[in-house]
Length: 219
Image (cartoon, rainbow, N blue to C red):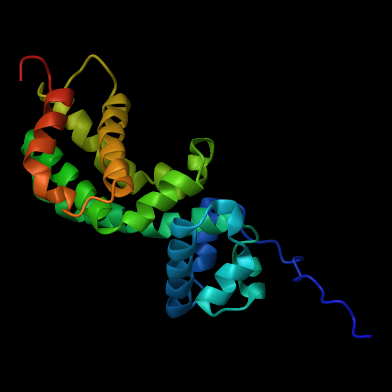
């Protein structure tokens, strides 16, 4: 009688912090990381979180289960790491697009455009974020603590407050929460309703709503 199959060797402890995971992933081949990212997006955006196994991901990505365990160790860590990679691209675009813009209103407008455009073009990323990661676990995604992205976002709101065009009765962090709350809900329901037209086509009206919500009373 053949011996029973053994579980993967998990004595190699995968990185357990966002920064450590990012450093570890830098050693992974780019094509391997891309296949794993696509597998995560496809599987977790189309099925419930508990229905997907690491073996499913390994098969879809055409990598060994041992590789998945080595770099991630669990489904939760796998999803956090992939979201970190995906949302990191939003951070890069945000920083790039804000270069050279001085006007406070235009900086907020560009911030809104870049964010909405990214979410419009990557609905699977949004579904992964909204459905696979409980709010209580968002701190496990490095991008929420990214000094680059947070400096870019909060810099826009702090600058607008300093110039007197944005609401100063609440903190810049609260303005950011309102901003992301509006855009997150709009994007999520756009996906759920399976709307055909991209949201960016309604950009001007949507920004008008955001501006009225965040601007100072006198603006």
